[in-house]
Length: 224
Image (cartoon, rainbow, N blue to C red):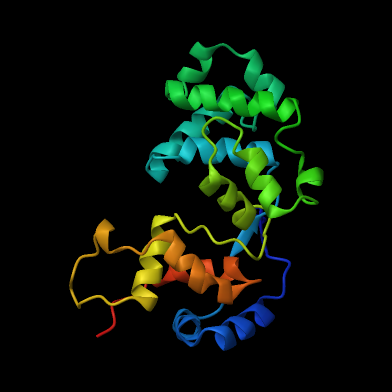
C-alpha cells in the first residue's frame, strides 16, 4: 500500500561511509543503530505540510491527529486549498478544535501561500536551504525548527542540523557527553546548540543523516 512515503534521493551509503570516517563516535552510533531508514513524505505541498506542522506544534500526537482529522472532514476529507481555508468562517474552523493561535497561524499560512511568500513545491525544490528557512519563518507560527523539519522530512535535504531540537540535544549528550548510569537527564545537562554546531561541522554535507542517528540514540537501551 502506498503510504505517501519514499526513500531519500541522496546516496545514503556514501553518507554513512563519510560520516564514519569523519567522526569515530558517530560511526559507533551508526553501527549500533543500524541501517538508515528515513522516509520522506512525497505527496504534500509546502502548504499542506506546514498546515500539519502547525497543528502538531505543542500538542500530543494523538490530539493533533484528531484535530487534523476533523479539519479535513470539513473539506470533504481532503486538505483544503489556501483560498478555501480563507473563505470559511472562524466558527467553522473552531469546531475542529483549533485554538485561536493556531487558527490565526493557518490563516496567515494560507494568505502567504497565495501571495507567494510560501513557495510552490516546484519552486521550493530549486531554493537553497537558508532561503527556504528565511521565507517560511515569515509565517505566523513557523520558526526555524519547523522549517528545518520540512527540509528534512518533506524535501529530503541531506545537510540540515536542527540544533535547537530537544531530541537532537539529548541524542548528542548520550553519544558524545558523559552521563551516569541511571541518572535522569535534565534540561541543564543538554549541550548548547553552538557547542553541537562545532562538532557537526565535521558531518557536512550529511548533517541530516547524522541528525537522524542522534534521534535514534534517544531510543536505544542504556549501555550497561
